[in-house]
Length: 93
Image 1 (cartoon, rainbow, N blue to C red):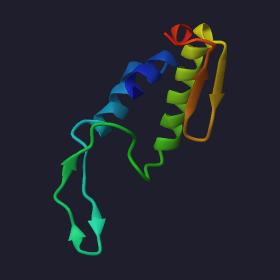
Image 2 (image 1 turned 180 degrees about the vertical axis):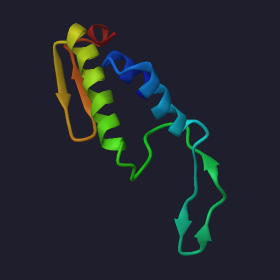
Image 3 (image 1 turned 30 degrees about the vertical axis):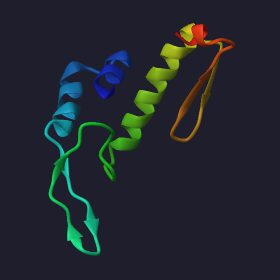
Image 4 (image 1 turned 45 degrees about the vertical axis):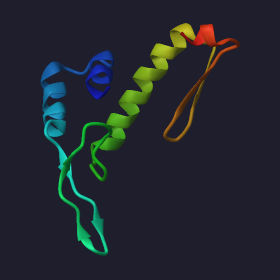
């Protein structure tokens, strides 16, 4: 989704590749009072705490809202969510 959105927003390919390289092979652990978990791959979402994440989130939300605006009569953007509405289920397709 991030790659698609960056392309939709006209970001140059070298920058898309640089950002996506940060997400390739990303791993994380969960820290609890009992210690850390084994590491595991992160395949969706944005890096928590990254200074780049808010910008990437905005890029994705703007690209999505532009896509929906073409076909759907209503869209509602929230802090971290997107809602699309239509009179029938068929209108959403």
